[in-house]
Length: 181
Image (cartoon, rainbow, N blue to C red; front, side, top):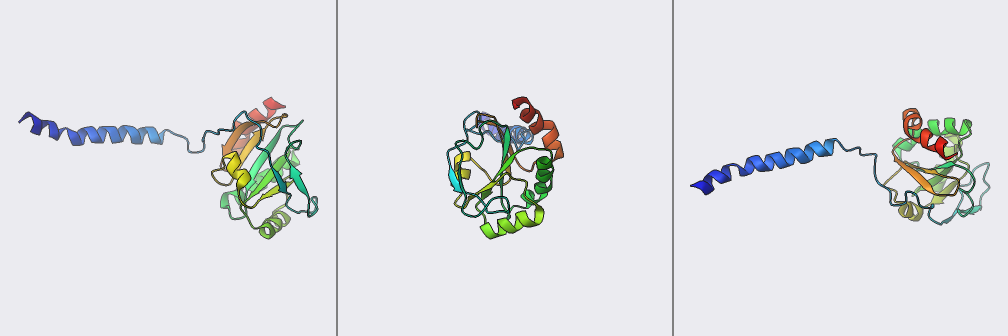
């Protein structure tokens, strides 16, 4: 008889466990994804630069010296990314304020990307073409957009998943960016 009564509490115990897990899940921030590369150098790469008026066709770049000597942002973007379109105007404003932004055109059509930058303006010092996503994989990219804060030594100091907007810039990224200058 005692075993039968004990079985009556099994559904209650399962409910309590599930409720605790659900409550814990609601308190997590989905934009805070740990990065294995935090406080490590940007992975080594040599990729073609997306042709733009300020970057002639056929130019290729390696990252050994790109990020040295200045604090900068590294932004992963693509024309197929709806959120990237939303953040693009703000990135142009940051460029106008003198913030150096480098782009990674992630798994995208090169012609579409060139047209995008011609129409929406180019906030990037340059943008490399990561057609096969290898650099994105090495960076631990989950999807676009993602933005990294790179220090003067080429080391990743912060990773932001999602769009960079005025609130994110002022509350999160700008304080980190300014502290590294």
